[in-house]
Length: 73
Image (cartoon, rainbow, N blue to C red; front, side):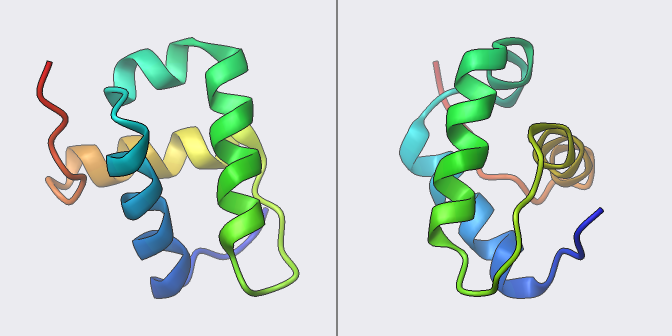
């Protein structure tokens, strides 16, 4: 399990907003979640790779804490 630093969390938030897919839908769609995780891993500057499960967990944590940008649909 990789460590989430402030830079990785901010990058996850930016990508989430750009993707424009609500977190519930993103987490339930394995193909979309895998693509999201791959895009996030491509954007991080450190030599780390977050699994799709780690990304989904972090999305849920941020959403529950009210720190995830709102996607309006």
